[in-house]
Length: 327
Image 1 (cartoon, rainbow, N blue to C red):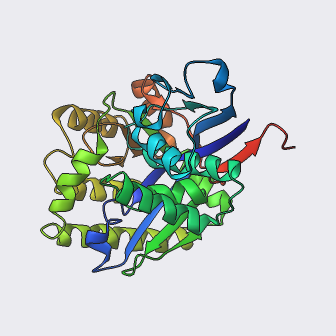
Image 2: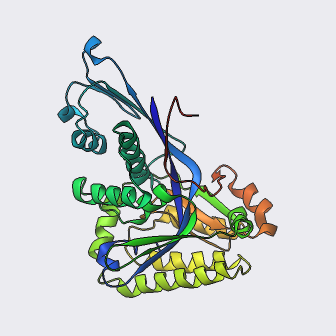
């Protein structure tokens, strides 16, 4: 058996600027990191000649099929097709957190799946090649309305700054002061809104408005630049709450579907409970929200939001593959 373990991610600043429609004009900077919540993909061979089906897929749905064309899960179908996997394959998917919630789960899944197949086929990809391959796969083959950050965070892992240049080339710079990152991590709270949604449809609308929203996106980049300077100089991390609030006010202007009455209510509840700022993760209109809460307000915040809080830590490792024979 081969399996992959691929992290989900949290983006603090710069989200929405990682689309070519924006960074072809101006370099994008995203600050965030992978977290210790994962998607696991297990790939095993089975003797399909003993059964009616040739391929078994077990995720939230079960698909036992004879032919690739019968697979309903588009990403799996296209990856299997590209790698000529048409029989004797059983695949299981397990995730620590639900999908379609703003944590980059779709791209984490694609990274983990392709990483698994590469190990099966004994292909060796560098991190840069894997991230670039998945970006191209999702955008060109699956026709998804995705940017670049999710695939990079899932592949590289760590708390970092991603810069995407006008050429489409990208670089990853890790923030290495672990004690300072721990201070940030300690004051960040992940809150579930209770809403799942399709990110691709929301992003499609926002992409169409990128030219119109360029000034807003430029301000989002400026927040990223200022945040990077403060992190590198190890300023009191309490600035993050105020920066998140500024970012959220800008993000809401990108499209009317980014927020809703329910999201606004939850945001106000969290700020009244001690958070100095926060934002909705991912495309918008549902999923997880991220809030910064100063240490002296933790007890108050936890008491009020206890049923919605998901504890997390930043994760240093990107997508990894193993086999049952690995030590």
